[in-house]
Image 1: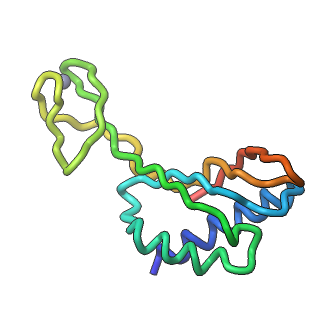
Image 2: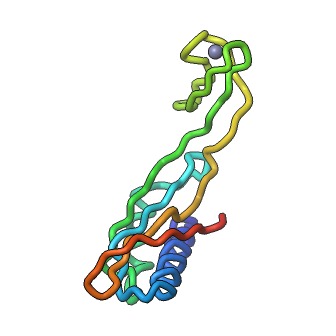
Length: 127
Ligand SMILES: [Zn+2]
C-alpha cells in the first residue's frame, strides 16, 4: 500500500522539521502530489491518521495540492494542464506533446506551534 509509505515519509519529514525548529506540535502539513503518482487521497488521509499517531503531527491537518501534467503546444506556444487525458490544446485545437510535471511528491511546508506562536517552516521532501 504505497499511500502508507507516503504518509509515513510526510509525517517523518514534518516531525524532523518541527524538531529542528523547536516546535512542539505540527498544526498542518501542506504537500503537493502529481496525478502521475496515482495516490488515492482517501487512502492517503486514512494512512496519515495512522502514521501521525504518537508523533508531533498527531493533531495535524493534511492539505493536499493535486498537480497535473502540463503540455506545451508547439503551434501556438500555449501551456496548459492535461486533464482526463485530453491532449488537445484548448487554444488552437492541436494535439500536443512536450509534457512536464504531474509527478510531484513533496512536502511544501508545515505549520507548527512554537511555544505560543505559529510559525511556518519550509521543508522539501525528495521523492
Ligand atoms: Zn495550441
